[in-house]
Length: 51
Image 1 (tube, rainbow, N blue to C red):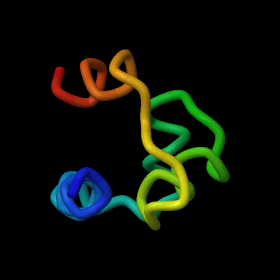
Image 2: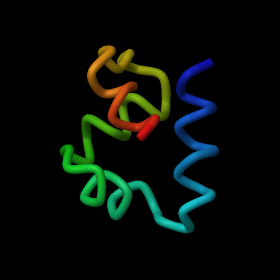
Image 3: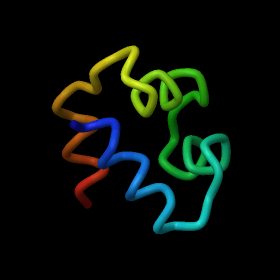
Image 4: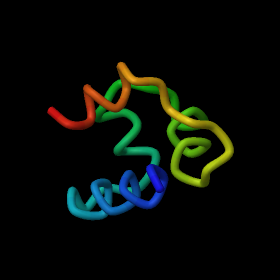
């Protein structure tokens, strides 16, 4: 699922959730909700992560 892939990408950067959220320019709570599967990211977010 997308949340597993997000965690994998974040772990590859070596950043914790808070730092990764800052790095990509979104709120920590929003990113955390994506990674734990509470919310689904929209297509714009997914495109940005792919870059």
